[in-house]
Length: 512
Image (cartoon, rainbow, N blue to C red):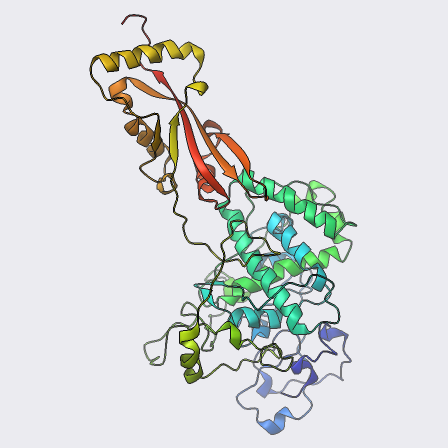
C-alpha cells in the first residue's frame, strides 16, 4: 500500500492522524465495509484490486462516542491479529472506564491504583528516553517474532535499552527499547501478583525513589496497599498472545499520558483515586462482553507461521498446522527498510525456518524481581531448594525450660530416640497447600509425640538480596499468612532458609 499513512513514514511517525489535513467528507462505499484499523492503516478488502489501491482513499471512519459512556461502535472492535500489529485494540483518547474494561478491571479505581503500583512506576521510569514516541506496532512486531515459551516472550540479546534521550535515533532502536520494557512489565506484574504484600511494599518504596529521580517535577504517589489487581496477563479465548502485551502497552501509555497533563498530580494528590466508577458490560470491548449482553460473535483472527499453537488453533480440516518454531535472533534485521521496521506481516517460508532451526540456541540468565535495566525477563522455572530446621533453645521462654528438661530426661530414661537438633526438612513447604501440613511435618521429624513435646515459637530466617546487598530477614510465622510465607520461600532473591523452632513440654508437672 502506497498511502503515506499506511507506510507510517518517519515524517508522520508518532503523530495522531486526527492532526493531519482531512479531505472533504466522503461517503463510504460498500467495498469498504471491513473495519478500519488503528491509526491510518487500512484493511485490504477482498474486492480491492491494485488499481483501486492507487486511487485516493477516504479518511478513516471516526470512532463513535456516546455522551460520557465511553462506548464504541461494535464494528470498530475485535481481537488483534498478530500478523498486523496495528489491529490491536487502541485505548488512545478513551475515557477511564473503556480503558479499564479492556484491561479487565471492574472499577476505574483498580486502573488508578494499578497505574502507580511498583511494576508501572518501574516501567514508566524506563520509557523516559522514548516517552515522546511509543511505537506500539513496531514493538509488538518485535515481540511477535521473538522466541517465547507459551505466552511469555524472551528478550533477544541483540536488543538493548537506550541510555540517553532517544530523539534522533531510528524507530527500530526505540521499538527495541519499548519491547524490552513491555516484556519486563508483563513479567513484573505477574511477580507482583505472586509476591507477598510485604515484599511488594518494599519493592514499591524502592521503585518510588527511582520514579522520583526520573520525574522530579511529579510527586511520588502515596503508599498503596497490596495486593493490587493486575490487568489480564493471559489471552482470553479468541485472542492472540500479543493481546496481553497490548494491554501492558495500553496501561503504560495511560500512565505516560496523565503524566504529560495535570491529571496525574491532581488525581494522586489525595486518596480519592482509590474510589472510582463501576465498569459495566457496555464499557468493555465487544468481544470481551459476557454472553447474552449484546456482544457479537468472536471471529478467530488469522495468524502467521510464527504464531504459537495457543493462538493458532488447528481445525479439523487444518492439515498444515505445525508446531511454532522461533525465529533465530540473528535473523532480526536492523535495517530501517526491513520488514520489522515497516511492521510487515510477511513471514519466512517453511524452508527458511527449517534451514535455521538447528542453530537455535538461546541462553538466558534468571532474575527474581527482574531488573528492567539489565536482565532479560521471563517466567523462571521452579528452583530446587532445601530448607533447614533448627531446634533453637534461645527462643524458648525461660519458664518453659525446666519442663522441657524433665521431658527429655524421661525420654532418655525410657530409651526413646532423641532427634538431631539441626535437620533438613524432608518435604518442600512450597508444595503444602495448608500451613497445618507444615506443622505436622516438623512434629514428625522431631518425634514430638514420643518426647511429649509440641511446637512453641516458629521463626523463618533467610538472606534476601532483592535490593542488591544481602540482608538477613527474620519472620515470625505466627504473624505471616501462609501464602506470604510460601512466596518468600519461592522468591529466587532469597536463600539460606532456616526454620528456627522452639518447643514446650505437654506434661509440665514438677514430679519426675
